[in-house]
Length: 209
View 1 (cartoon, rainbow, N blue to C red):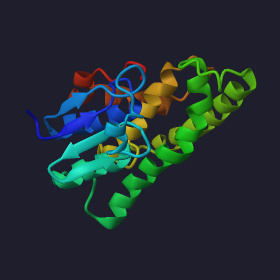
View 2 (cartoon, rainbow, N blue to C red):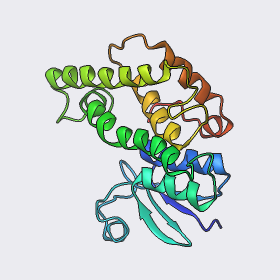
View 3 (tube, rainbow, N blue to C red):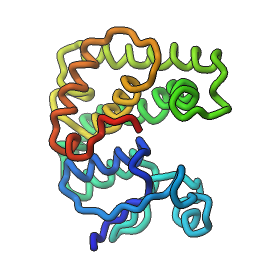
């Protein structure tokens, strides 16, 4: 049995970040379904691992870790994958900048539209909430469009990194949510490159999480 354990349902975008990173590195793992229709993350057993009651949680030889972007950085560093997370402080900062942007600005923008339209969460189905979220979400994606329009293949430069794992899955969510979207050709081409990566294809990550 694998020494690396991932707790979380495959339909979670944050779980997918970890699984895609594992795929890029070649890490074998054992995954267990937790949250949203599976074992409750509010059980004492789970809360003892992550007091926030959120997926994913991973267990490795080093211990227990939560927060998906942090897990991705940990895995790249642990396995000496300087291509995925550069060692150079400046190049690493360029990667982490986009990871932090995804976790804060971009996540905040899509919440109302995605939860209202896809998850049918009663707290977000009000049309005004969905409309405001859609406007904000599209504005954030236009920032990404400008970044990718300067001629870089990936979000932090010419090389694929863990920033593309977390941003790419968010692009997939944007494309799959039934909202009015502007035409963003650089974003579309970028996602086309991501979909060709073997680890992405093996994970079937172009479905809507």
